Length: 282
Image (spheres, rainbow, N blue to C red):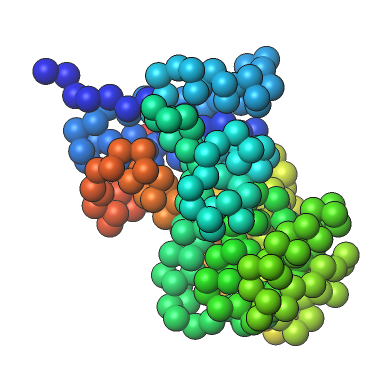
């Protein structure tokens, strides 16, 4: 008999280098499940996001991952049962079931797990976060769970930053949330600095903040993981900051997504080893 199959996909822009297809394929092999995983780039396929999402919902997909810049749009197309995910208002994992598409956010849980892996139970302190899009919203709510004392938001779209700030204030009045225009100025006196913009990823080279502004802070996180050693994290490490890599967010969000896609167990340590040592491309 042939192995059971699971049809998955990833909708996003600039995803040619994504390792998510490999992660889910390796997770399937652990369980004797043949995973087919499609990269779905709307512009390359001559379809907009809405059309492509509808195609997936009507097809044989078990589920899809959603990445930049479609996570907030995806949240408007799914049923969200978790009040926390509804508050985040962005989804990165969609399950297609008999009752319609269901939205989940494993960026949130993935970030919390990545932070605990590196910093244990040490609270984040005051944090500057640059970028308030889909992944930024998930990370910001993760900071609430981690007990951040205050959060400074920077985004080129001030209205988007203000909207997130209001949502966070409603969720946790105890955390001071402010919006700023200049990242270097907002970095003064914080313990952590976070990049949730695409700046630094393949095709968007650079850094969202001048390296000198990182001096005196304690830790840094970059949501970008391709490449894992972004200019932002390289400069943060040079200033002695503890690094929470975007690779760890990628790993944990993928592990959590696998559970949603399949309901099957996973040897996470073995999967981590395979991802770090294999040259296989999916």
